[in-house]
Image 1: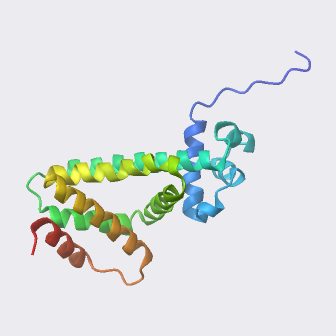
Image 2: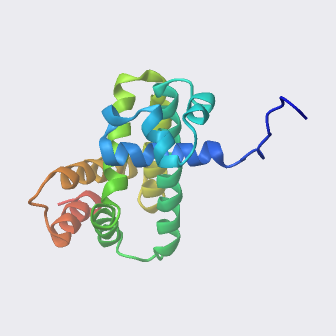
Image 3: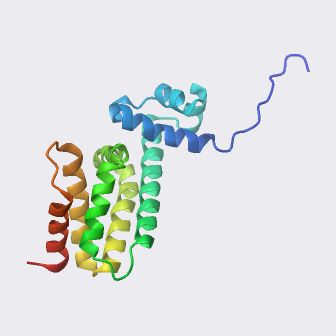
Length: 185
């Protein structure tokens, strides 16, 4: 047909690909480096695709935070299934913190970048709260509701401290901190 544009097949995964690319851009450049152009390049899609699916940068931030929270909750639940019911929970938590810092450092930094963004953008707050709620629920199921909340706050605080320090405590130091929180003095 003369003058008609060739239709490409619709890519049903494009939106998800863009969301994951937004996380990658934040990991590499920080929130200030998040642009439609940078995300399009990282996703390998035309610039128009990013602006079609996510009109504003806040829309991109929102999808990145949602994806990061979902990924985090999924990984957390996978971890929880591997921890035996009779496991030393303080030791298991210490190992989880160290794994997040050691093996998943870039993801941890991105999650905190996005978490901080939620402090300044109210529409992002429910998404960041999903991570907190999952931690509280999971840790509370191994202890009690109040201790679960304490452990969730401690877990997040330790992750943030370990992500920004060059002089990280050892795994045994982190375990001692969790042991105190779980069992008291």
